[in-house]
Length: 407
Ligand code: TGC
Ligand code: FAD
Image (cartoon, rainbow, N blue to C red; front, side):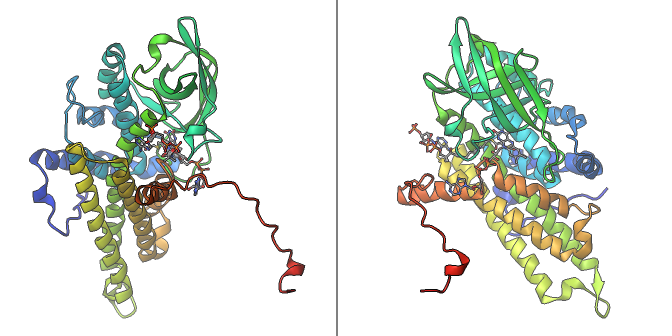
């Protein structure tokens, strides 16, 4: 079994706490020993490696920043490094941990009642329960505020109606954190597996994130007890706060995927011989690609590290996180493409991890706010002008081919 060497061009290791290094190294070893031997098979078969859940729980990867309920209470930099290492293995695995930690444990911990926390946080932390997060709907992805799912108060409970789509771990989940419109705005609810009126089914045909389960959730007059409302939620803002946690982890994860592609490409270039017995690494064009990857990975590490430090100081704003998610997933996407080029035909087969990362990163580029949505979030921060929903204009009639060049 080969050990992943890591990428640390600027000697950033001394900037990390002992705790963060220990967490990273433990997850790096876990990925080398337990993930790499099975991940290509999971990707081929399109299955989530649920057999890894007990070991991930033992390593304290679920809810790692929570300091209660016997959870590790790590800082955000350590959490980020965990995400980096997991995504170096596979984006689907990082997604599993992101959803469990940032999108399920975080909202229950931040917005839940004491009873909800006591019931779910320990079980989710031990991996005995799995969670999912339902925000996106078939007609509302980038614009979740338009959601059609409703929750109506009815006696001592709530009635949910609507559909959520593209939900990671939907069919695996014991509990779904579901966002729905109420008379008092958007609020979060806990819906347990098996509740009458709640059904989940997997979405098939994915060419990306194949080692992850993606599902549709349907609510048809689904009645849940009043106690399943997350009491501290009062608007879409609460859902977006959960996204901040997950997007931050993805910013590190993108660097992990880019590192995997860079190391695979560098090693391949040193070995692969063409034209006169020299390895392809001797060509300037190949070197330029490796230099691009290493430079961008290094800049991405600095960005993620600084946002992590700001987060630990309570100073990270959502636009800082948007910049890190946007940039670092783009670095992963471009690195995967360059690495695939360097591997030639071997770049399209799963004997190497590159094509899997290249396919995975298409999902990561899209979920948790597309690249372009993060551009607009940053654009709004810079200018103060939200450009998500420009005023309606009547489109000019397009010229017919016969009219082109007439005037
Ligand atoms: P807008 O009017 O701008 O905002 C509503 C309120 O929320 C505040 N806010 C935020 N607060 C905390 N964190 C953020 N990131 C926030 N962004 C906005 C805002 O200040 C406002 O507060 P207040 O007090 O005035 O009420 O809302 P909008 O409806 O115009 O939407 C803005 C937009 C487009 C940026 C937002 O909706 C968005 O981020 N869209 C992208 C959707 C998205 O990322 N979906 C992800 C679904 S989950 C997922 O993909 C999981 S993948 C699995 C994995 O993680 O691995
Ligand atoms: P759309 O919003 O329809 O966007 C389509 C295109 O239009 C994009 O290029 C977008 O950038 C562009 N666009 C949209 N609006 C604008 C604008 N105003 N200006 C410029 N361009 C714009 N969601 C969950 O709630 N929970 C999950 O667990 C979850 N897991 C996922 C797992 C996978 C594998 C995938 C692929 C998605 C997952 N999602 C999940 C959904 C994800 O968050 C959405 O796909 C994402 O928010 C984008 O929404 P959309 O796909 O509907 O694209």
